[in-house]
Image 1: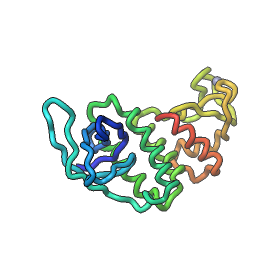
Image 2: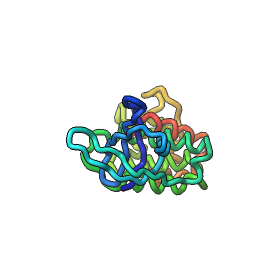
Image 3: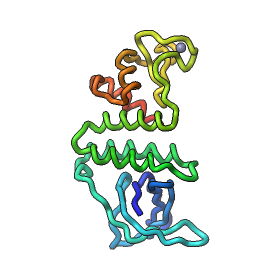
Image 4: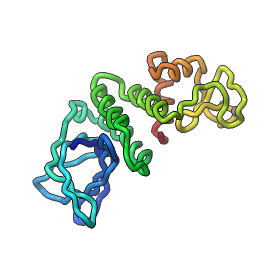
Amino acid sequence: MKGFIVSLRPAKNEDLIVTLLEEQALRSYYRFYGARHSILQLGYLIDYESEEESRFMPRLRRVSHLGFSWLYRRNRLMLWQQFIGLFEPHLRDAQTLDPFYFNLLLDAARRWEKQNPKRIICEAAHRLLDFEGRLHPPQSCYICEKPLGEEVALMTALLPAHPQCIYGPALSRKKLESYFETGKTAWLEESEVDYLYRLVLKGL
Ligand SMILES: [Zn+2]
């Protein structure tokens, strides 16, 4: 099986509880500490077998790490870990998962080397909100429900509002519309991408 490590928690005696985003589920495994075991890090894509135990969580066995070249670039890895850290809180309560989430991460990981990771994060967030039916194009304010002007501020989950309703910095509505319509960030300046990226990191 394959899965992305979306959370790593210490257990007793240096053992680990590893939460993996698999194609069909978000599932936690127990990993016994062992000097011969490969080191696991948040964000890794791994191939593994699971050993089911009746009373406890399944164990992780025969782990191999499916590497991406950017894992050795510190800044890219840091951005990846920030991004992937969003998925465990977001999907924690789901019983089963649509393969959409696994494929979204796989697609992002493959583009991470060549493209700007902050833009990939903004585009992935758009795809996720669209898939979940939570995309609100910038037409009316989420707080007061009145029409928006030329300047729009965004809240968590990219909900649009009047800058004065949330006391937040604003972006041009025209540019935001192009992002909401196409899911692409090509029309956005670096500072605007940074604004969206920081917002996405607050939660999906
Ligand atoms: Zn408002």
